[in-house]
Image (tube, rainbow, N blue to C red; front, side):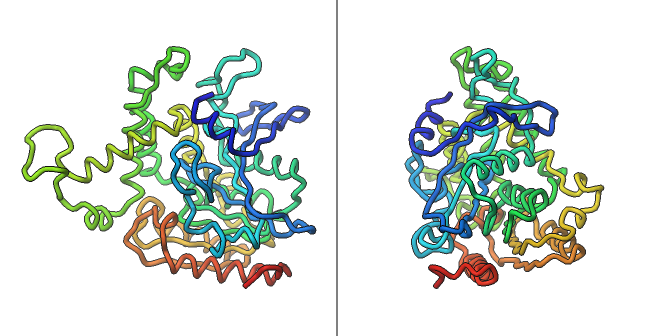
Length: 386
């Protein structure tokens, strides 16, 4: 267990599952026992009707609405979660679960294999988005929560939302997939592969056994983060924020230090990331995103995933998101329409790129607030609504 994981576990709730009934993974391995770490905000109603599950994206975790125990920064969706905000703990019982394979408390490659008492490292079985969702469902069973008022998430979190709606339609009253797709594009797989290769090319990676050697592939993980972070932004946002401005100098250095502000920014993103994230977990979770293909899991027809679904859907995309462009959200909307599902869709005009779903986007807030108000009234969840 990493130091970051110890700090995380000290400040979150967790459950040990799969003791009597192991989790059957898509790769064919049975995993158990396994630990699931999570955070909750607010109170569950007496009839258990106000539970909202937030599914976190790739590099985030369960600390969605509070100060992070490792970085000290505010919750990663602080713009959306909190008193008086769209997801208000006075109104909803909010749950955020650290995904399987992660490094913030839920069992993953940094955890110990009970058979050897050594870190799993690359001996940990490869997991999928479906495996993550089944582990989340097992935790909800453990907590005695039969169904969810809403499942919401962006990017990899949006993939989990789609998986929830397809696998457990009767447990999901409403679903909000944001800035996501029903499968990863070749371009996205390619970017992930560059990141994975950067990690595995670091001499300190040691074939994934770096903990046993007392090393850490921090340089490779930093490069992976820098590469991915570029995809989260838009050209307009980068130009507006940095342009060709120099970093703490008046003239070019004619060397390979960070001459430009954008270079310094990316280096900072990479160096701070390695303090809170595990390199092997990065390999596993990016692979899970690459493997996600909802249509393929339903006979090659995406509409089959939602046939007869009682779930109410609201999809959100962003005009400048080139990682998960709007056309991919529209494909999901078309499939939902073909399945006669209840669906609404909004494309938000912004130049902030993929990361817009994490930022202050008033149009997104208005859309989500209106959708949740309508869903709450449809369910009869009127307590605390403004």
